Every structure is written in structure tokens, then in C-alpha cells.
Image 1 (cartoon, one colour):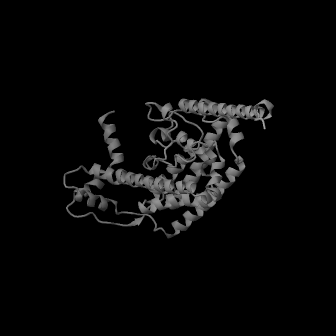
Image 2 (tube, helix red, strand yellow):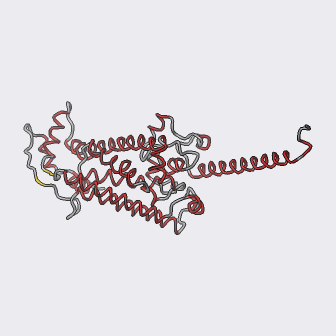
Image 3 (tube, one colour):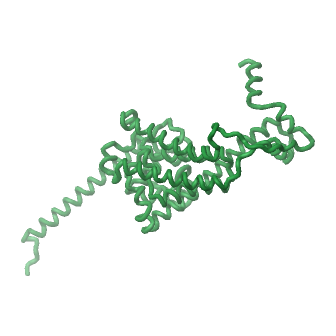
Length: 351
């Protein structure tokens, strides 16, 4: 890459004349004006509501195509036969309830949006100048720019991740500990014993509002996210939730590489043997570790690996299935033996 190209790249990223204001003795002037929308004609606050819905259906359809055309059978967690046999809700019921949740989610979002101030611009260079003055050592203007436009927003979104995880863990765990709450609300989601992408937000409407809509909205309010940061948070968390329920364990899936809470981790929670474990969602697993609710039945299959892969999880499920069949066979044989024993006069006590 030539020096000219590097200079051109620098000029595209950094406006040197703009950043020179950070060297001023006095704070740069503030000239507030309305901030242009990211997409012309769609306010950023509305886009923050639309983008996650579009992402949900687009990503779900992507996995549905993989399902229908059997494009990744090796990485499928459960067979199509299992999905048809074990799941208690039809796909049409699932899609209907997800649409209902998206409607409720949108209405709630529009209500909150109506109270939000319009996004403005013109204060950024002043804010960067204030940051630079607080730093007790010299720092290049370019780093101040990166700190303000990339690092600080990233930290706010990361904190929002933690808030969402905390909110969902305790509410999700409560839904399992309280029999009424489980039967009345959360049991609907667990009608999908073998999750698939469309079912990521298959919930009772009340639970869906409390668990997902309220949790994400609260995280955005607490961290004071801008509308554009909300777009990132809501869309990313939606994609992550769909990925957790996708029914596949891909070795190249970035969601499953970056986050310990992935499709296998959550699939365990949907199985009868793990329903009282793995409450954490959708990003991290630290609350499960803290409360000792992480499922450890797979530890021997993980060995020294950081995460469970699809081969080991299949081996684990197959071994569990064989043990259950053997136990059922043993119970049947014991039952038959007892019946024969009762019918044999020689085994009865003489009166």
C-alpha cells in the first residue's frame, strides 16, 4: 500500500482540520442541529425497532433454508424426525406467537420513542475536547476520536449486554422455580424440546414482553444508548437469540465462537435432563457459574476443550439415549419377573 493510499485512507477516517480543534485552549463552539437519519426517511429511533424484526425473520429464514435443503446435516443438533416427534407446537403456532410478540414489542417501542428527544449533532467536538482535557498525559487527537466514537459506545453496549443477561437470568430462573409462573407462562417456550430458529421468541406474550422487550429497553435506558447504539444492541441481541435456538452447532459461527452461551449450551436447557440448568441467556454464563446452575453432565465429553462441539454433544446424547433404553429394558424385565414370581405357586408362603 503506497503512502498516497495511506494518506487517503487517513483523510477518509479522520478529518484533520476538524480534529485540530482539540488542540485549542478554549472549548470548541457547540452548534446544535438535528442529526440526519442513518436511512433517509426513517428516523433512527424507528429503525431501532424495525431492524431487529427484519434481522429475526431474515436470519430465521436463512436457517430454515438450511433445514429444508439439508445443507448442513452434519452440524445439526437434532434430526428432523426428533423435531416433528418431540416438539409439542406446530410451526404455524410458533410463527403466530412470534408475530404477536413483535407487534407488542413494536407498540412498546413506539410509545417509548414518542417520549425520546430527537437526536442532535454539533456537540461532539466539544465533548471530545472535554475528554482530552481530563486525560493527564498527552494523547493524539486521533485516539481521542476513536475513544469517543468507538470505545465508549462499545463499552456502553457491553454494559447493556451485562444488564440484559442479569435481567433475563433472574427472571428466567424465577419462571422455573415458581410452578405457577412456569405453567402459566414459561412452559409455552419449552413446548419446543428441539429448538429451531423461528422459535427463538416463541413465548407467552406476557413473558415475551417482560423477558425480552422490557429487559432490552431497560438496558438501553440505563446505559443511555443513542438511537444508533440501540440499533446495534437490539439487532445484535436478536441475531444472538435466533442463533442460540438455530438447532445447529457450526464451528465457524462467530456467535458460537465468541460467546460461551451458544446453541448447544441452550439446547441442554431445552432437554428434560437440563431444564433446571443453564438459565443464562443470551450472551454469557457467569450467573449460572455463580449460582451453580450450569449443567455438568457433559463435562466428561468436553475433556480439555473450552467448549462442547457437535461431535461430543451427539456422543453425549446418544449415550444418554442408550442408558435410558437400557434402564427401561431393565425395569420391564424386573416387572415381568415380579409378575411371574407372583403367579408361581411354589414361591408363595404356605399358610
